[in-house]
Length: 360
Image (cartoon, rainbow, N blue to C red; front, side, top):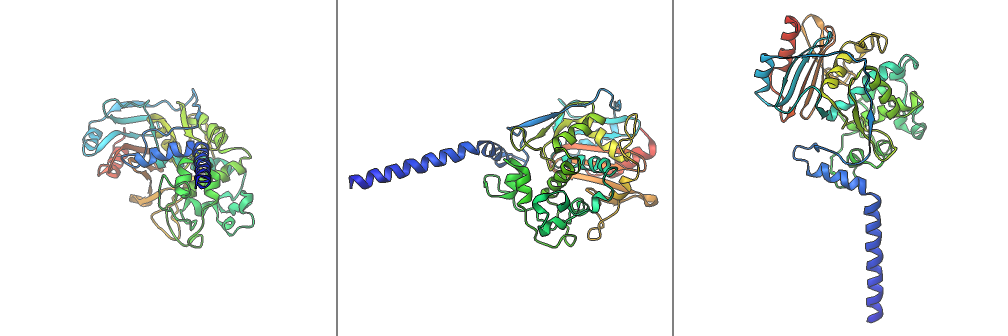
């Protein structure tokens, strides 16, 4: 009996030691996962762990902010933190909640993926037909995998055939949890399976953005972090901070970049202007025309943007995430950014159209 008790005690100690070792080895995951699990609105206020600073430039487009009573009236109908309407000349009508300002750093949440638009637009100069090349040409792990036949255009269109998957933050085997908390964003993305043939089914899934990020790194013969640093230094004024899967690792692009409100609107203006930077063009005009072409499966969705018709055949480009809305009118080069919690106020589209017609 005593021998059995000793053996049982040893086994228990070994199991406990292994459990402690596993938890310790994956502590960064658990630390972040708990923040996701306990977030009141589904998005943590802060995510612990490794990050990387993207440095802005001292030669960014100057923005002139002015209070706008019409924006204040709309902002008051929702839990608004900031509402900005900007023109291509840098004039910005603005409303800020107490404690907020143009320099306030906010998590863009799902808007983080918008950096993929300028990154692909720039890489297209060196890689003709990049959007329609099978991603297996850039991802050696999928070179002989059927998923390697998916194209970047299908990823932008949300037609990869890969589901969004349920998000259970504290499950280390859940793909969404691994993509949100690490410790290896690329491994998590490569482990995603298809539920439908590519090009046949529309479903917004965070893995699509992360796979596009991997294509950016391979096509640029660099890392995603380096490509994002280069881009940020070309148009942004302030430093931004991106989430890494682990120290010295790769960046998340499906979520979680923190940047100033001013630079979020600058990003919108850069895209709406089809690469028109402050003093130089960052890519050849014409890329944005592709973004406004609807997919063959979902006429309301283009290359990474929702699409809404406007008068005279123009299109409104929309990017949304919980508490974040960015609206772009490419033919005028204007952008609207709403940041808050809960549902966005009604009338944002008409608000942008009014400012477009009346000028800022």
